[in-house]
Length: 258
Image (cartoon, rainbow, N blue to C red):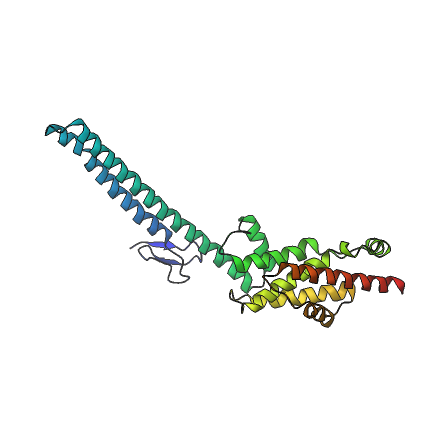
């Protein structure tokens, strides 16, 4: 018996095994070989069926009969080919999905949330179904990494002088992040993402405190006064975001009046 190396964990195991005994990944080579054997068998059957019109001709069959037999052969071969192709494609898709999930779960366990974001972007997985746990993490990480730069003093003064409370965009993102964490909690962390939800919730509270002097208690009271986050009520989220923008605006006014 030959040995093969697992593409996922690098361990060696028997090439006849269906899965890696160490990490559970499919033996993709065996799957492909099995389907190739099926296709080869179908090709042999095709050759056999293609000989039927010739045999029919020797027996004096009519042209219509020969054409009908040929059509049946064609339908069988096409249907078999498409069926096998669909099976192989599903296997390939499953194998790739399993590999991506295992890779990102390793990052998750290590707390490498930025790594999850970059991996999903590199592999074009951001909006692919089946990766909901990692998509939410990638979304929240993207906000912190790219959109939550503290405003400079000139911009803060401009907001106050022109009463542009609705230009305080960063707190809108913070409220979205807190809402995402709350939705996970409401669903009892069905993707086992409790650690990441706690991480981003704490990070959001810290951002509000550092940049606007808004405490966790202030934030929780504002959310509670609006009725709390509701995943099915986008208007409520938008109202909470606006309320937080106004609170941040008042804190900027107080800061600049001192």
